Length: 114
Length: 114
Image 1 (cartoon, chains in turn blue, yellow):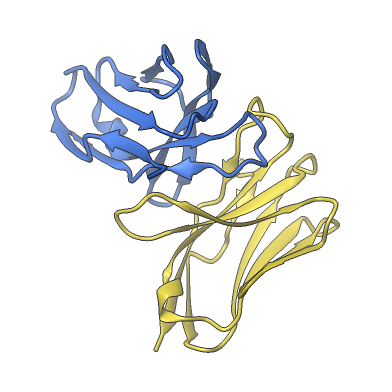
Image 2 (tube, rainbow over the protein chains, first blue to last red):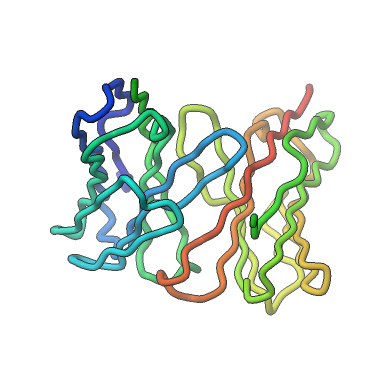
């Protein structure tokens, strides 16, 4: 089944404790991205990757890192999480870097930073 | 400055009637628009899109209208069904490349009442 998976789905952590949210897609997609969804703000893009070893900042990259060592995986890294990073995170992928290609979203990761 | 605006946070519609969700944008460079639907605890799923060379695109019960001069698009759902109850996000891009990420609106919560 074609899908985007994220792990973990739920995470409670404390300020400053490094964490990684994994994202994996099995559709051989080139383009992957991370979004956060916050009440009243909708979806905002954090980082995106157009292909292996090619990443770039989105609208709200501060406090986040990503890597794209393999085509299928695009982990989101919070080196020192802070409470303002409490949010719902979505990973997405699409076949090419054309935004006319449908983006497929993962199920989301709900993060609480205490 | 919010480039994509969904000014109605919520909308209630009777089953069988028409649902009209509105979206306004400010960036005249946007040339591709998409609607995503999101159920609780799931990632957004692509619904329908429209290119700026068109003013209407239809897919079953869903039709998107684009008025470029007014920088306005709308999603019509006819007839509305209880399963359409979800949050709908409007998104836009100003290019055909992953270098120009999607910009999302804040979303409109549609409730279809049986």
